[in-house]
Amino acid sequence: MNFIFAKVTNSRLMGSMGLIIGWEDKDDVLYQYFLIDAEGLGIADYVSLRNASYEELNREQERLMGGLGADRIQITEDEALTLVKYYGNKTIYWEKELPGETSEYIDFIKNYKPTIDIFDLYPKICKKIDTDIEFINYMTMRFIAWDKDSLKYFSNNEDIASMHITNINGALLKNKVTKKDDSMYICDVLYEDNDGYYTCKLAFHINYENDQYKINSLMFTDKEGIYDFEVFDEISKSEYVAIYDLKEKDDFIDKFYKLNPFVLKSDLDLGTLFTRFNFDNNHVKEDVYVINNDLSALYYQMKDQFFVATYNEKDRLYINKLLQCNFSDYIDFKEELFFEQNVLYEFVECESEDFYDFLD
Image 1 (cartoon, helix red, strand yellow):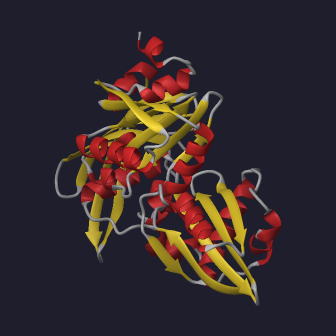
Image 2 (cartoon, rainbow, N blue to C red):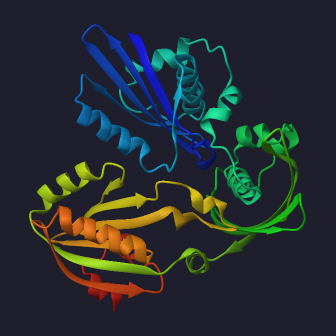
């Protein structure tokens, strides 16, 4: 088939990217959608659409890319297939299963001969970093994720690239950045590893030249364990929970997801959870980074109830008004509650069937 176009999100520094490749051959048109987990799984998800309508193509694009908070960058055929080959080989190396209809892309992994390497793509797959604090937060995230590629690219130093404190690709939960001078930064780090939660301190010495930040040196202290309830206190935030009575839930869920394809849908035993992220990653620019500050709403359908959690006044008013306007035939507002800490996700996790009993 002949190449039409390709686009990728410039979200590499967040650990995941969405990649779309379009092909055509006479009257046959194929669109390929790859979710790339650059930290662990390689190619984490794959879906294809053949001769689909514009609405179907757009919905799938938003499902893949809408929650990544990134720009969508046009890339060449060689660049796109280099990404598929590189991260597909990572999946195979880690003995993970390649997702979806592998016959549609396995030849790219096995036989394609790239003319570039992965580091040539970094200026496109990474957003331009605007501030020193943003750079420190991203590099802390990459260090905790044991991301050798990114540490190597942003340091040009194999020793720094090989540094790690985690057992696997850990998750940065919170990072407080303190600037000591023009080039030295201290980080108070809270992170999750495969065997629990930990704190540590990092020290970065950086410089800025040729319109790019670089790591000159990196040091870290020993890690210390922390209890899960302490982690919850550190990253929790106040929450509004609106509660609606729900009619014709199956029809509602189908229409809600079609209208909001950018949300992350999770089918659970007791209902359906939708996670709505901000359309940017500006929370990484804050001197106190918190992982869930990119969350704008949680929607949870359970039986004939629909719960909506929001985290600031602007989102509270906008998201609930939009919901009431678009789905007035399906929902009736019941009440809204305010909590000093996150409640709705805890309710979903505990698999309780009664919200008010859970609160008691």
